[in-house]
Amino acid sequence: MGPETVDRIMDLLDEIDEKIQWVTDKVNDILSWVPWGLGWVVDKFKDLWNKAMEKLGEFWDKVGEIASNIGAPWDLDSAKDAWIEVGGPVAARASESDRSQSAVDTEWKGRAADRYALSLGPQGKALSAVQSKLTAQIGPALGAVASALYVFYVLTAAALAALVVAIIAAGGETVSIIGLPAVPATILGAVVVAIAALASAVINLRAAASGANSTFLQVANETGDFGAENWPSAVIG
Image (cartoon, rainbow, N blue to C red; front, side, top):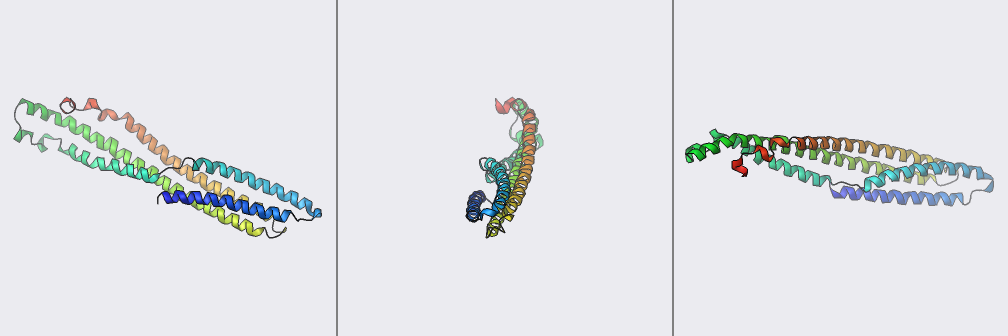
């Protein structure tokens, strides 16, 4: 799943707009030849139609907000992979920051070597914190948001596709004045279902984004474990 999914969603939105106009034209065509004595039927229909269009307006408001803030989960996945790739080498360096694993004692002698060896412990601690409190936290958090975005796109596309089908069905009901009263109800019911589906998708996405934000804030507040002041001067001076 990639950018083509976003294109599919945009195409569905255009199709919904076109199908609504198509149904509206068919409705107006039928209303144009309704006998004068059935004016009350027209008035009743218009009340139902206006309710359906009002609900459709709510749908467009929600969709407009979504369409103007489309995210890119594939970019988040790339960022996640980059953070995870950083974690491996950092963890390896942390495990090597141990005097027993160092060649200092065999290849380097003297006071300078001893002082450097003393810095290995703090280096290892700082490196471990980079891996455990930074890369190991940020990568999965980005992945969770990316996954939620993918789910959001799938649910949104499914809801829009179902709405297109319902609108087409409503168009099929506009064959006579007898079937006309069912048209607004068909559209209204489909729009209500679509709005509910979009709301569910948004809730799931917001939950993932909120969880990731909490993780990022926690990481930001724990930088003392791997900040500049925690590294030995021998490696940063």
